[in-house]
Length: 156
Image (cartoon, rainbow, N blue to C red; front, side, top):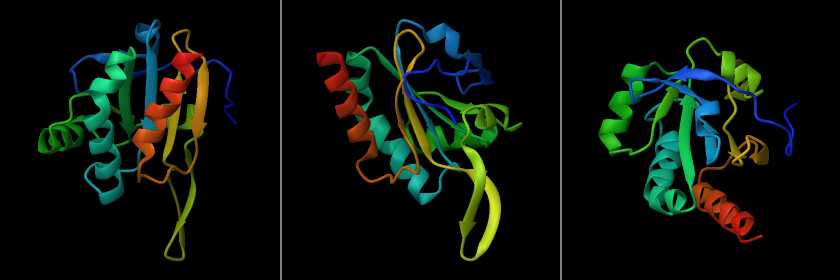
């Protein structure tokens, strides 16, 4: 299990900015990594659009937002363009980072069990340490809660 106040696992993944994203490249910034099940599904759309609306406020606090799912880059591009998302989405088709962050797990839906992404958000500090983890995220007002948490941490 990944815990708060530990170093975030380092990784590289293909990104919608056409470059490979490396968590190391963002040291010196806060980072919100949110893992979501699937592009353009109701909950994932709400969560992503909410983060997008609050992006300028996150940016003012020196914070990057990144969404990660196992969808491919083509799917991510379509999703980003449809909702005018201004931050990058990362593709983990091989499920390596999802496993590293322990968000790939057994889920139950309508009586059946299957492996999938457990909606989880990580707030990482400027030195790569995990400040806060939200597990089994409920999307309503989640982006706002993450922003408020970051504002309170910056005040300290």
